[in-house]
Length: 370
Image (cartoon, rainbow, N blue to C red; front, top):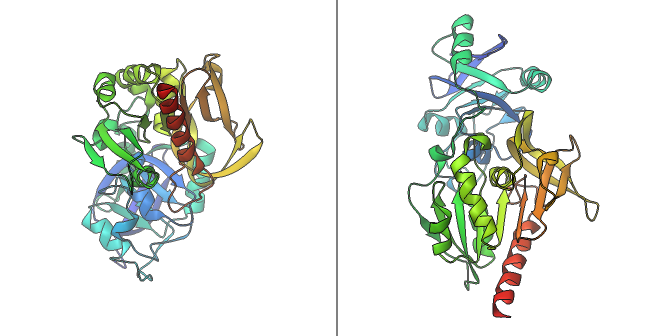
C-alpha cells in the first residue's frame, strides 16, 4: 500500500476530504453513502445493491482479516469507490486469500483512507446522501466538485439491468428437492440462494427483464424478488410483470428492492430516504406480535405507507424512523420485507422469513392437492 500518494474526495455541495490513496489508482463518481457494520466489508463490496455508490465504512479499521472467495456475495465487487478511516496493511486471518488492498487493485476500485469518516458521516446524516467524486489523479477541489455535480443522480436511475444475470441459471437444492423457486435477479446476493438451497429449494435465477408469462411457464412453487440497486420508480415495465406474478396466486416473497417493486405493483409509491439505511443494526418491529428484530439493511428508497391500498397490510416498521419494513397482501400469498433476512455475516434475527416462505409454498401445494 502506498505511503504517500494523496487522494481527494469531493461532495457535490462543495465539502472536500483529503486523504491517502490505496486500492486502485483512478477516479470515480457515485452517490456517497455510509455503512455502519463492524464486520462484513467484503460482503458490502460485493453486494450488487451498491452499484453506482461510493461507500464509507463507519468502523475505523477496515481490511484486517483480508478477503476470500467464500465470503463474496456476487462474482465481483460493485461499489464505485471505498472510503475508510484506516486501511489495514495486513490480513490477519487464516481464511484470508489476499489483502483488501490487493483485492481492490485487482478489481480497479479506487479507495481513500486517513479520512475523518466521523465528519463525513455526520455531514451525510445532516444533509442527506449526495453525489461525490473520488480521485487519486485529479487533486483539484473545484474540478472534482464540478465532476460530482455533473454525475448521474440516483433518483430515476435504473441499475438492475447492469447487475442482473445475462441468462437463466439453476442452483440445486441441498439434499432432497422439496420446492422449485424462480428468483428474479435484480442484484441477488449469493447467501439468499444458499438459504433457499439449504431448505430444499431448487432455484432458477432469471434476468430482471423476464416476463411474468415466462416465469409462470416454469411452473414454480414460489417466486422470489431479490434485492438490487437503483430507483424502483424507474422500473415501470418490471413492476407491470411483478403485478401479474403476484396476481397469479403463486406464493411470492420480496426483499429490499423486490419489496419496493412489490409496493409499486400493489399501487403504492416509493420515495428516497434522506441518507438511507445501510448496516447491521436497524431495529424493526413486527406489529402483530410486538417483537423486535435487529436487522441488516442496504437501501436508499422506501415504500410510502399511506399510498398502499386497503388489501395490503404493513406488517413491520423501522423503530428509528417508522418507515415501512414489511407488508403482506390480505388475500394473495404475497409478502415482503425491506431488510435482508439472508444477512451475512449477520445479524440473523430475520432468517425465519425464509422458513415463512417455505410454509407459504407448503400451504399452496396442500390447497392444490385438496
